[in-house]
Length: 351
Image: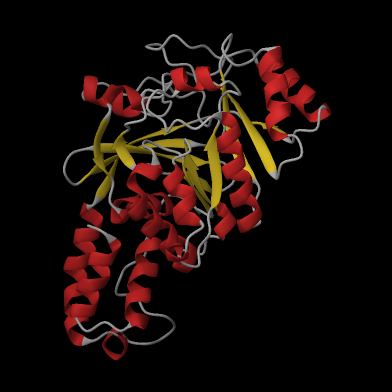
């Protein structure tokens, strides 16, 4: 189900724009659809045909997705494995400080070499209603004031559904536009769409997966990403940053012995110094099945310190739920491998 289909169904039942907005807001906030504001009685607010259809509609929306399992982390995060109506699963992550990371695809076609999700390829798109379902399920557990599209999938490969969801969250979900973060490996269609007239009033913040300053290495790490050089990617990012008035967040997954050396630090300074940008440096969440490893936290901290000294605003971030064996795609992979077994939980020493 796409959001536009839902809105058309509501209109066919006699809903006016006020009623449509009310249904969408109730759904977004994980509240009963028929609930009205203040003391107004349902029969005084809803058109009769719509009022009679709301219970069945509520069941349909609930059936779009259910939390199959929860995996809390010691850092206040929680990884959620969500079963969709057709039996497919996606992952969402409740982040500290009222954030939520959502998935836009089942699987992913980009094939990033350090990502578990990319190993299975693209299975199907996640509809705009299924994206909103992830938010509603999360809000039933805790407040959500920021939504980042950094879960399973490449949002640029599902652009219509992702932009529909972003528009609804920004207009009716009480989420500030800069707190809607669109993460992409750098598909040129993203910049064309976000800067174009058909984007609508919601301009999300943008996070670009950089990971290296070397074009050849980037092609190896992200084998099916658009063939943009790091210089070209940063140029497009700077254009969007100036147009939207939000700094670009450049994502850098720190891989031991791969992109953590002095040459890369020089490359980062060359690319990002003086730009309207923030570098998010994230030490890799190690996956046993893959050959990449996470550098020590001391080394990561020293890299961030040096970049700061050299004029690049850098935030050292820890991938949420490090104590849970659940880097993006791992919960789904474990569940598919053996549904009868719980996901392994790795606790920190002394926890």
